[in-house]
Image 1 (tube, rainbow, N blue to C red):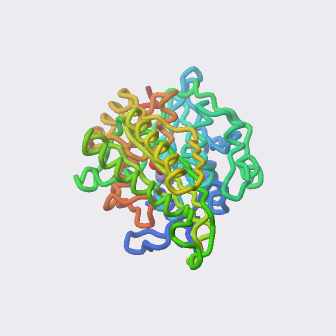
Image 2 (image 1 turned 120 degrees about the vertical axis):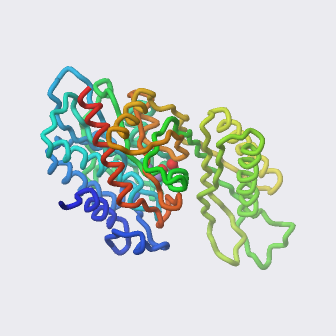
Image 3 (image 1 turned 180 degrees about the horizontal axis):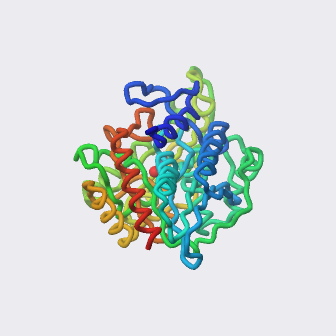
Length: 420
Ligand code: GLV
Ligand code: MN
Ligand code: MN
């Protein structure tokens, strides 16, 4: 039989590769050329269209909400009970892989197809979900669509966020045909479940096919703009410079050093990264006049995140006096660490046992829409191994056999949840 899930992942994985290219084996991944499809790009519009077509083919009733979250409903037999939602995201980081997010969307569609094929009658409605802007690669914050959906941010504020070209999410969605009017009321959703690649080394190293997530780490981003004085690299004496990049270098090392110290002292899961650095005007013979930094701080303990964020903000301010620069700091809405539902963890464990698959419980260091949805709905996550623990990079990969195991466990979980 044709492997529909593999076909969807390979076909959708061509969107955002330049040139478009189908990748169905680890050996033909290109370490320099991954998948780039932030919200608002043509590649993102194409992958959404592909997914919506598959949802419709699977008999789902497809609708879109104001921030472009997509929902596809399979009716249930009992109109009086809450739905089971299942899905993930289709946007990607810059130069990422074809599985982060897409696996969760296409395996949810495949699970519905399998249930349809076997003539399964779901008591609860099933809603396949695609969330907008999970990665934050275009609109300055992660988990954008689910943040609006759970009401942590208004739809207006989400729609007013701007991408690097200065275009608002509202305009981008309208221009690409992904602005909808549907309103999903989470009061009518009883469970949410998301299948995702682990994106870390734990399952792969342990040769464990399935991870069941108990907690998801929180994420705080800090943006800083350091303004010094652009000037001639040859004529500006060392003692007369206001070099914004030298000031930024101090922060990069500070974040790395303090996160390491916290890990050593507290035994915490703290991570701190300066992943984004934009240097203006970026010329070899020019003293850099302005630098923008994007700083990512995570932990499963909110106080640890807060404390590192506070220290980083102070260190940024201290640059002003030391280097004669000015520093502006902005912090987008943060995402708190979130425990997932013990009830859903148990049901996933039972579903895996019914499928004959070994599992382990674990935490997620990566952020997921699940952590937002968990604040309103009983939520669980299923992880499959990432080869070499690589993700957010072109070499991201999961073996097809592991993907099939994940799809089987997800389908059985849906049978159990939608039948309950
Ligand atoms: C989202 O994928 C994140 O963890 O940054
Ligand atoms: Mn993801
Ligand atoms: Mn990601």
